[in-house]
Every structure is written in C-alpha cells, then in structure tokens.
Length: 169
Image 1 (tube, one colour):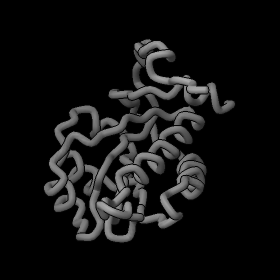
Image 2 (tube, one colour):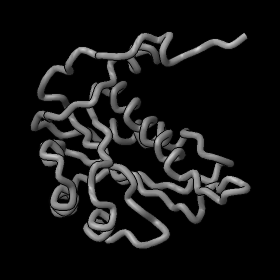
Image 3 (cartoon, one colour):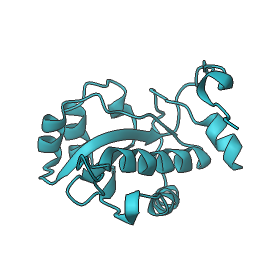
C-alpha cells in the first residue's frame, strides 16, 4: 500500500473483530515507531503493545470507552516529560507533540498492515497511570486499540483543503 493510500484508508474504528494481531505485524509497527522523529531526537517515549488480559482489563477499567475491550491489542503511549525537549523561554515540555507523531506512526503502520485503530485520550490520567503502575516522570498520555475492523469505516467528512491548508507565496 503506498503512503497516500494508507493516509486515505486510516479511520477511527470503534468496533473490532475477534481476531488476533500477528507478532509480525507488531514487529513492523514497532519498526515504524522506532523511525518516528522527536524533538532533538530525545525519544522520551515508550509504546507498549498490551495483549495481556489482566493488564488490558485494568486499562479498560480506567477508560470509559466501551469499544476498547473489543480490541485484541491496546497500544499505550508513555511519555517522559522530564526527558523530552523543552521550549526555551517558557520551559514547556513538547512530549505531547512527540507522542502525537510517534503514535500516528504506529497507527499509519497498523493501517498499512490492514489493521484498524482509534486515538483515545478521554480518560482520567491519574487513574490510568495507577492502573498501569506507571510512575513519574512517565505518564500514559494516549491509548490506541489495535485490531481488525468489525465494521466498515464511515465516509470521511472533512473540511475543504482550502480551509485547512494555505499556500503563501
């Protein structure tokens, strides 16, 4: 699948088939994650591909998204704000941006593998960190269920490109 087909096919899927994700697919996704850029190449992140039923149950208990338990794998995006690059002047950690890039690499690679996913950040961060036994300076900043889609993706409804992309000469 070429790049433009991958980005065209990627959708947020909220229903997953009862079908395992292969180790080979997870290895290729891991390789894509390892290539993701981060600010000043700090790489202050970890992605965990959780298949363990007890840990998945703990994640699902800390997250209100009803579709999460359907996915055979849950990607957990861990970030370390202390190790991430910080903007001069306001000392703001750029870890959320780094993790956005890293997790999108994982999700696009998953799409190329024929897998489905969905960004999930709608949970209580403190409860999620406790459920996963994540300790500072690390934090579970995002999740992504990963598996085979059980339903077709809805058609895209996007703003016209002219509203979101401007060429300034």
